[in-house]
Structures are given as structure tokens and as C-alpha cells.
Image 1 (cartoon, helix red, strand yellow):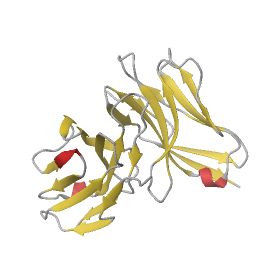
Image 2 (cartoon, helix red, strand yellow; image 1 turned 90 degrees about the vertical axis):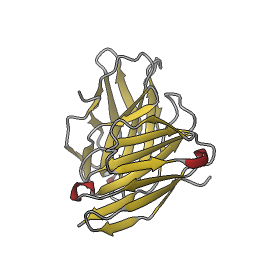
Image 3 (cartoon, helix red, strand yellow; image 1 turned 135 degrees about the vertical axis):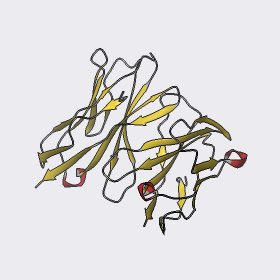
Image 4 (cartoon, chains in turn green, red; image 1 turned 90 degrees about the horizontal axis):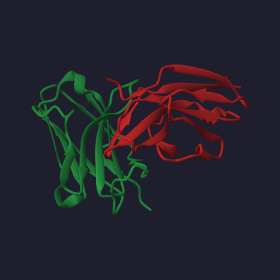
Length: 115
Length: 112
């Protein structure tokens, strides 16, 4: 079974530039999460999708971050314009339709450096 | 308020010894799930073990066991017979209402 795919693996941009990350979840997984993980900290949930609908985006900085999940499969996360504090690893995870027992499977992450 | 609290920033253990990583949680939802993940220096998140709020017995997966004390709202991870490859960051996470929230993590270092 293929895992969660993310690209790119690494990205370096200048502040005020824009950047986009892509995620392809495991086939059949209705739930998709985007997390931001700053070095040395735990993952922070940015947005959660159930199919192509947003379930939770309460911690997404909506003035600069946006995310979509067209057709309930692939998802993109965009930052525009980027700030220095956005430097982090962005993790995508997916799981079967929600029950408390379904574990989330994670991609390798995208390491973003804003200079 | 923190939903998941891991009070040990770092832990050290001798190879072949057992170690306990602490986790406390906060929820008013009667239905929730507790997870432990391992994150090696390579950055991937590896699922280790799961405990449901209604489970009567503590979960076990090989060398991993979860010491679940519901009244105290704690879900400590016990690793028996530590190996050098266990050196990593460990995260406790809770799923409630679909949302999956992580703690700040504990760095475990296994000494030979």
C-alpha cells in the first residue's frame, strides 16, 4: 500500500514570497490533516479536511495561509506572503473516516526555510 | 489550555532497561483515543500504539505498552528492553471529535 506522498521535500524561499505544498493521501482515506512542526516542538494542526470539506481550520493563519482539497483526494497548502516564522516542517497526514481508533499516517514532510 | 501535556523534555535510559514516558490529557468528551508516535531524526512519524477511552485493558504492542489511568487522565508509554534504535522524539496525541492533537514531545536517548 502506498503511503502519504508529499512534495517538495525541501524548499527555501525569501520572506514575502509565496510557496505551495502538495499532498496525496493514502487511497480511500477521507480525512486529511496539515500540521506545522517547528523545530523541537510538537505538530500543530493547521487544517483538517473530511473529503473535500473543512472540519477544522481554527489555527490556520488565514491572512496568509490557504488550503484546498479538490475532489476529496489531493490537497495543496499555500503560504502567501511567507514570513521568517513560517520556517518549519509541514506534515500531511491521512486516515480512514473518523473514529477515535483510526490512526493517522504521515508523509515525510516538507521542510520550509524562509530567509 | 493544553490538551496534551508531556512534562519530560528529555529522558535518558541504559540499553536493555525499561523507560516510561509521561503523558497527561484533558478532555470532557467521553469518547476519545490516545496515540503514541515516534519521530526519529529522519523526521517521519511512526505510529506505535493506540488506547481507546472505553478500553478496559492497557494496550500492548511488542515492547511498547500503554499505562492508561483514566481517572488521572494519564496515558504513559512504557518501552521495555530499550534498544539504541529507540533514540528518537516521542509524541503523545489525542483524538476527540475527529481532531488529532499532539503534545510537545519527549526526546529519548538510549545509552549503550
